[in-house]
Length: 87
Length: 112
Image 1: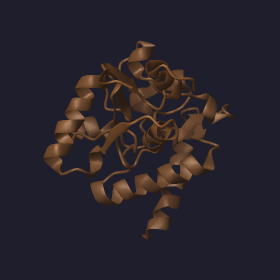
Image 2: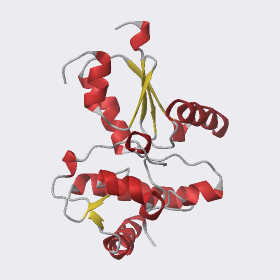
Image 3: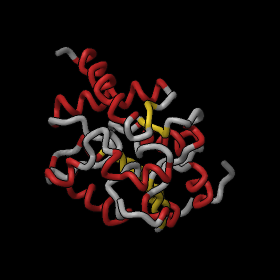
C-alpha cells in the first residue's frame, strides 16, 4: 500500500452497497477512509457530493477512489484489480 | 400512518408499478427490506422515497428523477443491468440477483 493506492469511499448511510464496499476493505485489511455524505452538515455534504460527482460523473453511490482511479458502484473485482490483490 | 405500515404501503404501492415495467422486487428479501426501510425514512425526513443509493441535489427537477421507482428515468441503463441501481427491483426473470453487478451508465455507453 502506497500513497498512490489510498482508498476513499464516498458513501450514503442509506445505501447497502456502500456498506458492502466499506466491509470489503475492512475484510481485506485495506486501510481506507470513508464518509457518509448524507450525514454531514449541508455545506460539507454539498462540497463532498460535488467532489464525488466531479470524480465519477455520476450521482450514484458508492464512489470509490483508489489512487487516481475511480470506481462507481460496489465492484469487488474492480477494487481487487486496482489494488493488485486476489479477490 | 406508522413507520412499519408505511414500509408495507410502499411495497404494495410499488408492486403494480414495477410489474408494468417488466420488473419485480428483488428476491433478496434482506436487501429489499433494508432498502424499503431506508426509503420510508427518506420519505419521512426528506419528503419523498428517494433512491437510497443516489445522491440528492436539492434541485427539484433532478431529485424527482431518483424518486422510487425511478425506472422510467433510467430505463436503458436499468434494462442493460437487469436491475435498478440500488437493486430493489430486478427484471421479472431474474432469480439470482447477486449475479447482477452495478455497472455505471457511462461504462455501458449510456447517459445517466
